[in-house]
Image (cartoon, rainbow, N blue to C red; front, top):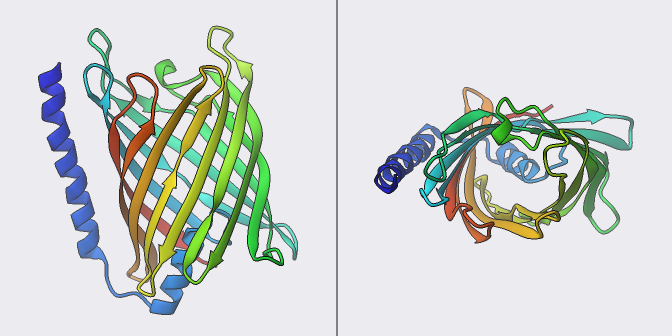
Length: 274
């Protein structure tokens, strides 16, 4: 099993880097001012901008097999104007998971995972200090097509975001907590805190450098999972359509036993400015 895992890793890495190189070749000249503003909005989770990120996350080093896992994630973000002062932002995370067997005797698994749905009520104007705020409910939906990829629980909780943008910099925090409220009695209850502090800088060429963590604390297991992500993205236009291409890597500062060592992320984001 070790030999098979070691052969898969170079192949997966080569395929992902090929995707990144191809992304660079299709980038064309952008309308500078508009593209920079769109890139800044893309760094804001509650911006007045429809965006559809399509992500490929690849993690490796899982379990005794040093197995790989691929997460294909579609994450549409859609704002709705409620009135002259408030917006409602819908943020959906829908993952399709392909997980190689982490230990001998287990099988590979694949299928749709559980969907996380967030709603942020956000004032259209920043605060007097320039902070952009949003808060609302987050729901966990047991939509997985494979019970090994699901908690088989319905979840509910609060979510908040706060950030500031100044001179190309964007910094802030997105957080939520989900408790299980219904679902299979045979599965463990869910009580997870998610923390995503983020920092990015957007240049005058609409290039964005960013770092964040997507940390989860499992209160049932008293266990942190802390991936630290570093990413480079470029906003461009293809036949007039604004598109962002991003490539990044991450390592795990904290992880459960048998969790991944490190990973890569590639993202193509379609933007639909009003």
